[in-house]
Amino acid sequence: MKILYFTEQWVNGGICSFIMNLLRNFELSEEFKIDIAVAEDLTDFYDGELRRLGVTKRCLAGKTRMNPALRMLKARSGLEQMLREEDYHAVHLHICNSVGLSYAAAIKRRGAGIVFVHSHNSMVSSKWKRYVNHICKYVFRNSADIRYTCSDLAAQWMFTDRQIRQGKVALIKNGIDIDRFSFDEGERSSVRNRLGIKQETLICHIGRYIPQKNHAFLLQVFKCLREGQPGQVKLLLIGEGALEKEADRLAGELGIAEDILKIKNTTEVAGYLSASDVFVLPSRFEGLPVVGIEAQANGIPCVFADTITRQAKILDAVEYIGLGAPLSEWAEKIRALNSKAVDRRQAAARMKTGGYDIRAAAERIRKDYEAFICM
Image (cartoon, rainbow, N blue to C red; front, side, top):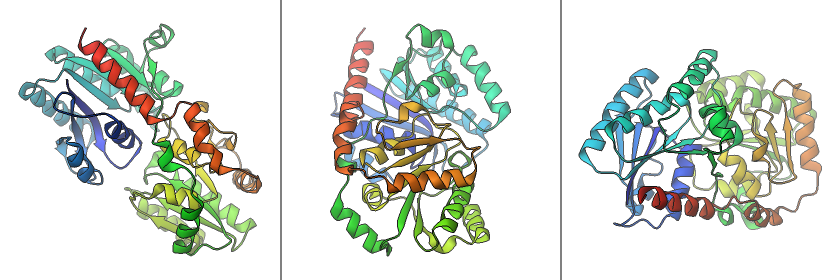
């Protein structure tokens, strides 16, 4: 059984994190092989692990960001070339919008195996792109054989209402290795010492510096929080991206740069979560944020923007608030959550009963591959 995974941008972010979680929990072999094709290959963060897993990654368009239309043209051409060169039993598309369904349509025209389409997002910021997305999900509505979604909002974004009503879209939870992210008191002490954090409250955000993640808003919230607790609060930002310098400039203008700690791509996310006190995710939109699941597995209290699906809330210590709410309300919500007594050591067990163990997702997908490929 040979399967090709495709996603447009290979970055250290949610989709690629989910793909890697799956690969780690499949028993890959000569009998069950997965290759990866990407339009833009923007990070080598996972390359060593992919080699150890025996997974080949191929870049179809380039190693830098390019015009989306040009990227799609190059990627489709490269994808068709791969399908001519190799015999795949299935192609599993991990995509963010219904324009990406055109890849599925091209694959179907070639008769190149079963097409799985996996929806991983729920919105874009551009009104024009939202309109195009709406049109494409109807134009290409029959291009997928199997439809997956990470949440209710991601399903509505990618697929038609009729397909959802008829039960033709399956929910695959963004599972993680829960034990890996469970709270560790020793790690908390070690990482806080390394960061120079003593009694201060540490607010954590994990996300690439892109418009979707809304760093400018987060920095303004932190400024408001800091004004109410001078010298008592720090902000930890984990990630990298095109808007990082812009965020740095804004932090300087707001006078908060000295209280911001920055970490780029890291394999120690669990330790940083254990070291932190509140996790904040003010995204403009998300399918279902993997980092939100990782944070809850760690038991850290979370504040999510109300643009994020309610399916992302598994534990009680998760609060939602609108992006249109005053900054002072965001600050107060963070303070209130931080003051609540939470036993973070119980979180991992509760997450497993909630169905967010990656092993369950991997087993479900593997069974679907076998069932539909052998039909």
